Amino acid sequence: MHSITVRCNVLVTTCLTYLIVLNAFCILYGWMKQLGAHPQAVVSVQNLVSLKRLPNPFGESAVITFQLDADLQSMWNLNVKYIYLYLVAEYSSPRFLRNQATVWDRYVQRGSSTFLAFPFYNSLGLHNFVDTFRNTSMVFRLEADIIPFIGFVFHTTLAETSEIRFPLEYTK
Image 1 (tube, helix red, strand yellow):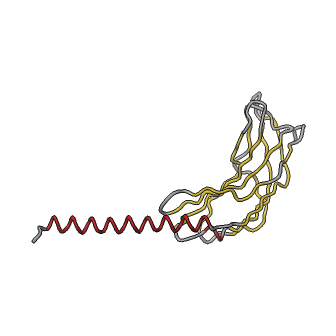
Image 2 (cartoon, rainbow, N blue to C red):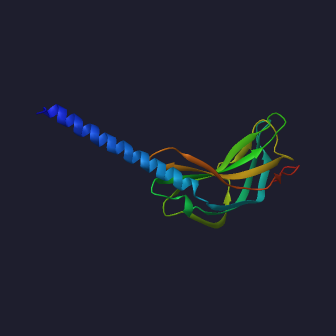
């Protein structure tokens, strides 16, 4: 008959083929579930806590509070390891048409999939070292990256605020 090496080769090849097919089905299942997911999220900027000049000549810093109400239950499936949520501030300046800064982020693990409505501070800070925040309009977006066990990272935008204008003068 066949030698032991030929039999081992057939066994390993068959097992690897089954594993590849199983992974492909898992990736396809997770992708199809993400296309059908419709998470509910609302984000609103409550107030500007401070807008102040930094010690360097062109630097400014802003601290905001925002309200987040998100139900992420529909985003979970068997292939989701965790969800990375982050709040992005987008504004334009005289030098650059599109500036983006991440002002808050959080990893959400299975079991803590619903945020109750409570205020957050921007933990990463909103700093500008080139232009000014004064009299600037900003839009804040809540975005999510779904990190799977197997497959590709799925990116989605959950909510967006209306345009918010910063004041002309610095605050305390």
